[in-house]
Image (cartoon, rainbow, N blue to C red; front, side, top):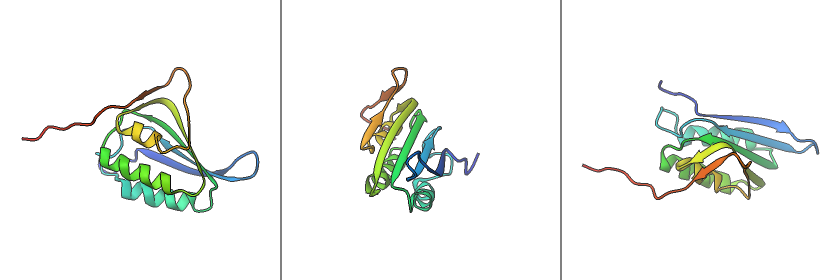
Length: 121
């Protein structure tokens, strides 16, 4: 499953005619060959003229360092960033959600934040 894409980015126009880039993270972050570098390159291309970003998340988490890089890229965006939890934003995906200027979450969605850890031998 090398180079499995765990995100989707779409440029569109909202009802007011403003350019919006919607970013969907609907799988694990990282681990499968797609890293933050690739994600951010695609984000830069889609968001170049966007005044607003919508980040829709339904992810069990993943690589914390990729999530930090995505978080920082979203925070650098000059326009408004709205994070939307569509299902679950757990672990590293919760970090990405925290990049939003506004977080939108239906009653039936879940957000899990915890102290990350690893095992070293």
